[in-house]
Image 1: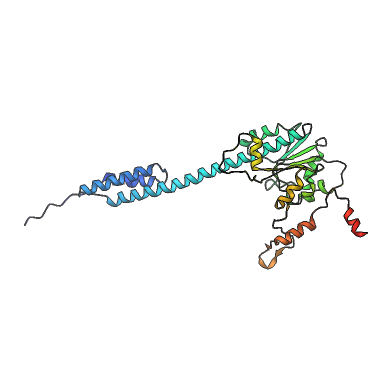
Image 2: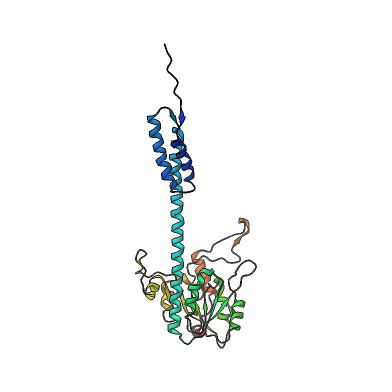
Length: 317
């Protein structure tokens, strides 16, 4: 009986190519489909020719191609979505600035405006500066970074900046005031005159009593209109677009806004007192309850600048 001659085997070039391109797909997603196609071709070729080997390489290449395409595809989608979201955020901020500038230009055409801002991305400077340049008789003060970056402005720095610009009638704050802004000497001191404040992007904690022609004459809140539709196209008219996305608080509508949206003025925030720390719990802060926060906010709130104490005198009598 004669033995059958041994079949000489050889590795499939298609299988090797499928494995290599499959591994490359983790670096370049478009290579993934090529790895899958090469793997399928290699398996068909091996099935027809028993002398060829490499089924494992072909299968591994296909799996790597699928995995690489999926991973890089999802990663690209996440990055693209994040970039779109950031672009939308920046466009919204620019729309907000445009709306506030429109109000100042239309309401106080003869004002002398001082803009206080921090440093910002040079790529955004052109669009921001184009809006600020529309303000009447505008001067810009750029705050410099400290040792640990830019700190929030405090009362002393705020007064110092204003003192350097005695002729301005309005101060346009391009950065946020701190939570303790209601304790600024600007609000609490008895002064003969002071420039009016325009708050483009600042919280209003404790500042409700100062929304008047003597103090804060405009502040923009991130409050959507009931007519706002996230999926609807942005209106071409900037005023209409602004009114859908933001709420401009002025002395004229301040009382209604404070009543409708008390959360912007401190009623619903968690507050932390210097004494509200648990030494037995690693120094973790103990948040006040909403009732306590509201009570503390009411007790610590500054007196209404327009109040003359008449009610208190009536009670005494």
